[in-house]
Image 1 (cartoon, rainbow, N blue to C red):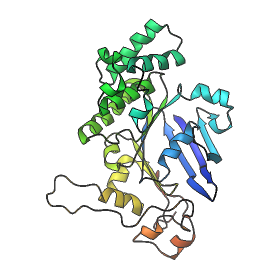
Image 2: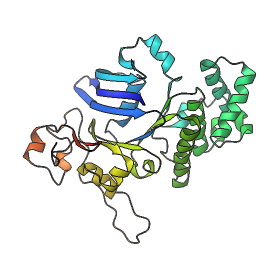
Image 3: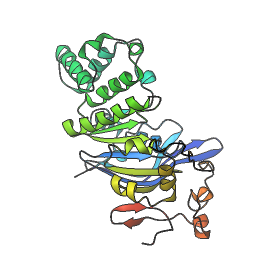
Image 4: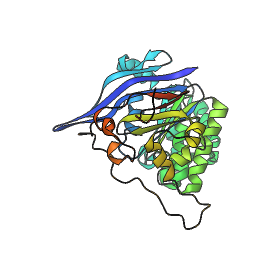
Length: 317
């Protein structure tokens, strides 16, 4: 059953001398209990997409078009008072840097208890017990409740933020670059934690990351963003076996193979587009090996291979 449905979403940043089209006509669906990975280079619009869903786009950003339906309610048209009841409670977010997201002057347990009391009708004693339970659920000993954020490692701080995100019993958690600055072992642990929580709690996850390889380990579906557009979207196994968009192919080729010695590291030549003045046509065409004249003139529409969507002129309807 569909939990979240996004249609033609547009979120722009209005600067004094330019308009940044960070999210420019994105369509996306997330089902109940599903893990979706949103991948792409920095500046592709991934984080803005996540912030748009909970309507926390920072100024001078503004949602200028489209719809975001959550359990049948159009979040874009809800009054802020109604949206505030959904934000944090029904849809929660794990932000990029847990060190700056946690209050350094408050014990981790107190911050978690405050979150629980804000969204649940429980006493402080009950909230304290729940806080301990949630910490233990994400792999942190309950007796660390009285520690301050600086006493936690980077991975533990990220786990604490995940505990705060699930403490409200949300239906959707948006995790924005949850493995940034963590070593590869801890990254894998965090990914497995998302899978565990999905299985135990039935919560859906949108995991935003630049690392396509790590999210493929746990995701059901992958959405690939480039230049504010969702250029490919489909089942993770289909995208792994048969990536369609040239950009997706390049992302996968750039993943190093640790089983091969002396392998040459690959990269995608060129730079991501300037979204204040994006190239005409397909925004990937200046870096694409397969670009033709039509790619330079017109933005490609959706093409489908079964339920696998791609925006590319290499494929016919």
